[in-house]
Length: 402
Image (cartoon, rainbow, N blue to C red; front, side, top):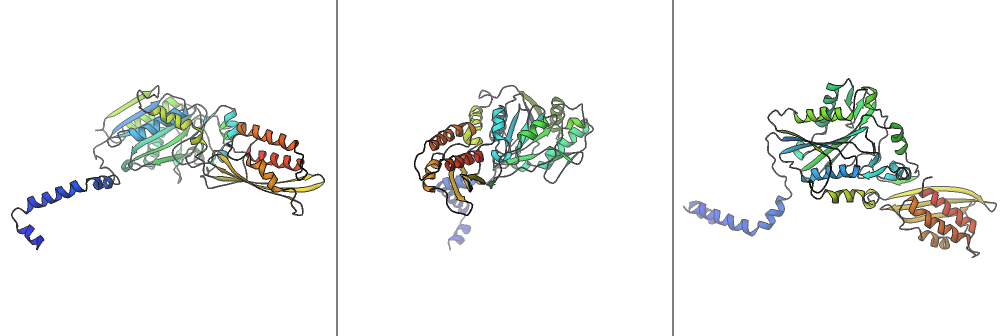
């Protein structure tokens, strides 16, 4: 009856609008919450194409700039291309374990930057012979294959290089050598797809630094896929970074959008004056808590055997690492026939002093030295000094690469 009256009443239209208005006002908060879960409608007009080229050689500054554009860029109306080269640096993926992917101690000793980026993918080595290319677009315009094809065509047009794209979306030179890996970050409405181009990097240093000395690791972190690499200058000696930047930038600016506006900007300094809040991003990327503590939990599992005091001794270790720190050390020390060697409860007192220590050679050396000194002065008959010292040395070797 109510529905019939509404449609029969000459004022039904006004009445319905009044009801709808009151309902909308009453449910304004709920409607706002629901709208946050639905993507914005992006314009179908040709987007403006913008190319940024960073002159900074600092990996943390360049990664922060990329993240700043990703979060603050006008992706509704613009497509961005960011390119840069870094000084020597090793960059691990968001879900990777740096101790498994590279030689952490050697990297730090050689003053090479070690960074974690906010995208997935594998570990890469950067230096000034490597070009980083990042396409930053809205979710509807995200297309990795299209980005790679653009770069491939730009390079092939200017140099005689045989480049193909494999099933992993890597760029392959001469049908065999990997010259570019690919990674991406996808947000609700925002994305970036980035990759490196090996132009003229120090391949020997790349190989050395990306070789981890750590073995016996059990982890769920993403592992890099080894590949044969080669610099593109070996196929095209006239190639250099500035020329590649220019040809890729030109191709992107005129990518089948003659009616679109074009612009290019060279960025000399990455500061809050031009990119408000970017300094905070730089600091966050440099923090130990982001580079190392973001590592998924893992375990170091090792076994050792030694003859001590005329008898064979076996040691099984399981060291749990959580957020980059020693969480727990489980050990089993037995004679060759399986009998216990010493009082494990007593030895646990030594091991507890190592918990919550960062997995860092410089930070671990003092506590290990203190414990070994303590063991050498131990006088209780229940503990064999030589056994305790050997256990501590085995733990140290398991945690710290030489």
